[in-house]
Amino acid sequence: MNPLFAFQLRRVARNKQFVFFTVLLPALFTIFLTKIIGGQMPGTAERQEVSASIMVSMMAYGAIGASLGATIRISFDRASGWLRQLRVTPVPQTQVFAVDVVVGVLLALPSLLVVALVGRFVNGVQLPAGTWLALLAVLWAGSAAFVALGLLVGLSLDEKAAGGAIGILGVVLAALGGLWWPVEMLPEAMRGLAYTLPSFWYAELGRGVAAGGWPAAGAVLAMAGFTAAFGLIAVSVARRRPLHAVAG
Image (cartoon, rainbow, N blue to C red; front, side, top):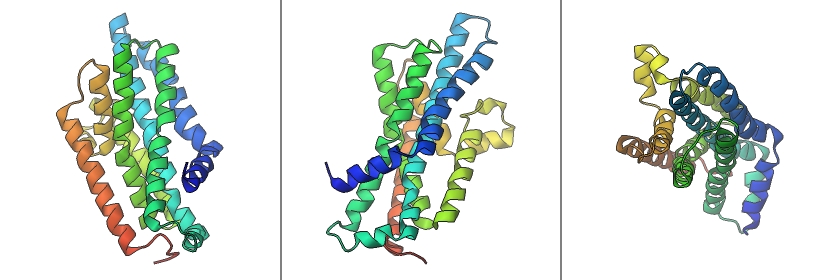
């Protein structure tokens, strides 16, 4: 295993706050929202549908937080001088960048798995084995868009601004993207805004699979577009503002 990759993976995974907010909190939200909302449904079929929808939303919520949180730390590494120190080693800047991408993608998986397990064994969500695997695979692949977004924020802002920006981004993406409540509950103007957010289309990927079908073509195209856009902008920023730069 690449030593830099192993170091960065252990470094983020050891962070207790990161684990709480990206793994445990979405799992707790899954239980709470299912008991509150699902308990009001009159029939078993309705409760199943609501439970599955909430589970998918919380899987998306946790994966978004993990992807963003694992990658914006690049701004902290720049400020601390860690990235400048790496310049005296044989590790090229492209490898540093690639390691952050892979770490961000890998750390989205624990949240997806834990929330799925809670949905199945605590909330009683019933899906065929193939559907469970497809749901995990689709949401894991879709998390790449938020890895790219996290890198973009981390490359563009200094550490204090990046920390604040990631908090605001998380709230906006969850609240307006329909992860905390159905988009249909939002005012019409805000509903239109939801359809422009990657979080809405990310959850739609999972909802299509959980319903027993394929992800909607619109959701797939939207997420591919967001991933490409965030990635290209991040690369452009990295060229203008190298990883070893401490300011400017």
